[in-house]
Image 1 (cartoon, rainbow, N blue to C red):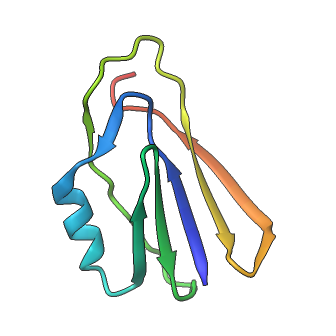
Image 2: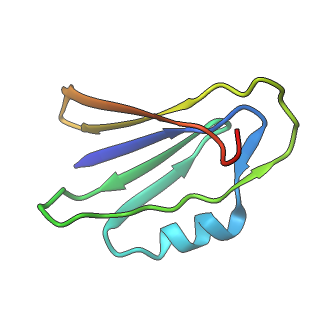
Length: 91
């Protein structure tokens, strides 16, 4: 099982519509949304490219917004962790 762990930008939440759209993707086995992290559980990865679009809603305006991380790792072997960062559009 593969986990895509998306830390949310400070002051943002996952938009309810975005959550609904993600939950209906057949590749996604499970979706967990915590206060500031979205966990996307995938049965496995393949050579086929996958795109996940998460729409966020700003609930608190934060100045000097810092990038947030996206981690991808195997649930059973987390040592192969891959980390990337993203920032809000227009920041």
